Image 1 (cartoon, helix red, strand yellow):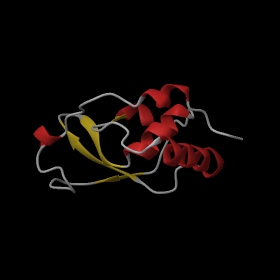
Image 2 (cartoon, one colour):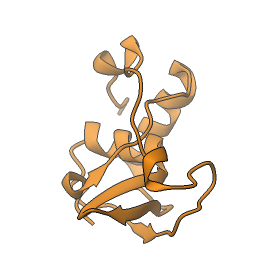
Image 3 (cartoon, one colour):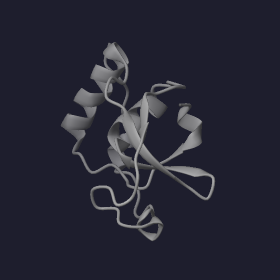
Image 4 (cartoon, helix red, strand yellow):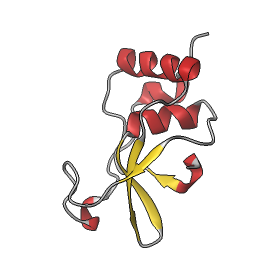
Length: 99
């Protein structure tokens, strides 16, 4: 699925070092594990795989493997739980994949 058709519902929660490691791995190997999403109101909300999604976006990856899920899923019980709160950590805007 195109990354442009997915919507994040959480901000980055990993610290800088683990995010850098993930970014480097995806830059080298691509996104291997599917990103789980639910469809509601014509929109595709991510329910698992936010860090992979944000890394793919940062790297300019246009298509990622996905798997459609149904609610309840993990901490999401209903569509009203699919609300993005907060901001990305400050380091994220400056992070680049190491080659």
